[in-house]
Image (cartoon, rainbow, N blue to C red; front, side):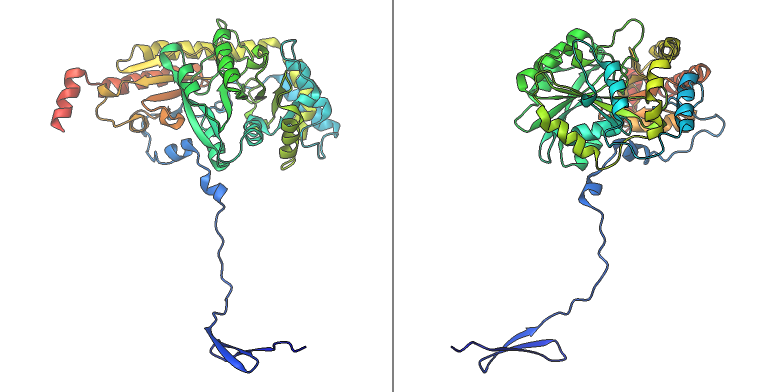
Length: 451
């Protein structure tokens, strides 16, 4: 038995010769690899896009130096110090800290006792909950992220309100999930265009996001409208991700209905937290409530949520330790006083801006926001809502978010949490700005001809 023999020979010029049984074959030059740096950002990071930051960061404009800045842009109720949380809430955290019992790691889904507290607080005969139905998270934003991640795969799509909170799009695109926007109707107090919604559903639709009460609209859906939304989801067999961070933050004339309490068969992941109702967004305490009366999610979705929660170990343990006392000790007058303030500011802003030519505010029913339509044809100097709000900063030092941030051009959003005297001043400045730039039909046509 004879085996073929090989001899590989390289010279100094990197020429390679292979000798086989006396026969020589030249392979030419082989490049020697020199290590080099090649560090690149991940595809996920490249796909991560925040519409608000993308728009606001380009609005590099100096405010009027003769007028103090009034920011109506950030949905943080703590900014001006006029809406502190209740003393009982603060005391609950102090007691949890002083106990020394909450300095270590908690289970990734939260302490069992805390999950039980949240389950008991939100449970009702129409939508019963147990501790195993609650996942505690680092704020409502993480709750939304986990809910999206467990329901949708790359290549699938989700249905998102327009106008709507920009985080839905930011998270979905980073995960390779397509976003389909369904329209809300300002003339119907921002109810969903149900026909448009249902027309968007296809075989790749993973979930429907319902935000009620709404950011940025300040709208609150009626029971009958929620039932119609559920009918669409039921017909199409699409689960719902309910963003209810503003749950119970509704004005006196309205009633808040958690959508899960109206569902008989549609499975729902409801996301909420302490941030808005208790006025502590920086404490990062949120939760997912798994509502699944027909066991459509089964164990798979629950197990998936647990697995995803293990990537990062959940919310602050100190706040978890205080959670029972926060929920049970916060006096009813605290909630009442907060809502009374927001309702007063909402009415003030709505009445003031309704009297301004060229603006069409939509009266809110809850949350912390009011949306204002801009009749752009009467402001021909500005191409869009971004240019309008940019000039408003420059001339009047009032900062409102252009609704292009929420996929809804030619509107702007007003945050209602500022002190009353600032709201009055802001509305006065907005009126002065509009009066200066407003053009009637004839004036607008003349300006267009001049162009």
